[in-house]
Image 1 (cartoon, protein in one colour):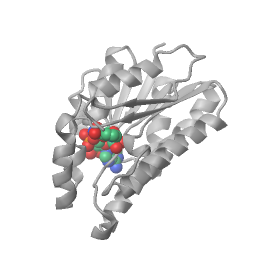
Image 2 (cartoon, rainbow, N blue to C red):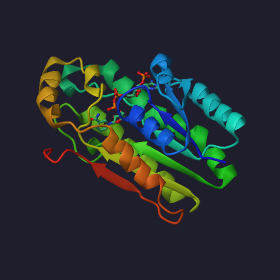
Image 3 (cartoon, rainbow, N blue to C red):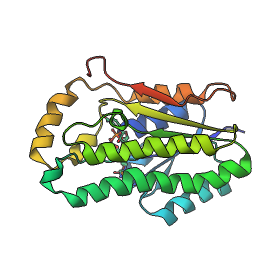
Image 4 (cartoon, protein in one colour):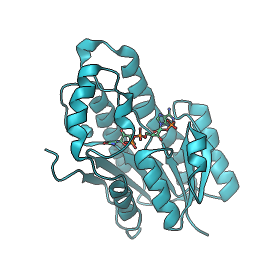
Length: 232
Ligand code: NDP
């Protein structure tokens, strides 16, 4: 039986490229996001309308995958938002949104998948964090905070898990996607335009995910950082 993979945030950018890559590599792929119309455009990907901030919905989606397909082998926790701003701009609702999607959404995904990984005695969680999981720049305090958290949660899972569960954090640098569209703060938006000038294609991240997944069962690729050569 082929392996089953769930990719959250599969409607655009990195998640879309990962879903496409895994489908091409023979996985049964379930692509999840809120914009289900965009998911339906993906050949060979089963669309799943899902808001990762809804814990019950995430659990129901994962349980449904196991009911329909017998197992869940890979989960790529990729859904994320990045409305950057300085703390003194006071955009507290955007801080909450980043925490809800990037941290709570990841935790909901882990909570839903882990019982199945444990019962199956196998599984692979791939978290899409960021170079922001390793550094803070002005305007990235909250976003980096959520990505430091994503790194820590994923590392914690690795330490607590049996060797049958593999855990990978992929930390991209600047990648072409819709991510910067969510920035409402004018200063942060202007800074991002220059910063994103050398963005690389999301297929570079999809290839990194595929690399981690295709290693022998005894090999756990725990972190991959992929950034444009120009990015400092
Ligand atoms: P995009 O904005 O292109 O994609 C984000 C994806 O997340 C979309 O598919 C979106 O789907 C989904 N998403 C957002 N909110 C929710 C939600 N509440 N529930 C379910 N899905 C949601 O950006 P990227 O592809 O760039 O981002 C993917 C990941 O990569 C993020 O975690 C981001 O932080 C990370 N990253 C990206 C970098 C970059 O330069 N592009 C650099 C470093 C990290 P929908 O709106 O349909 O729900």
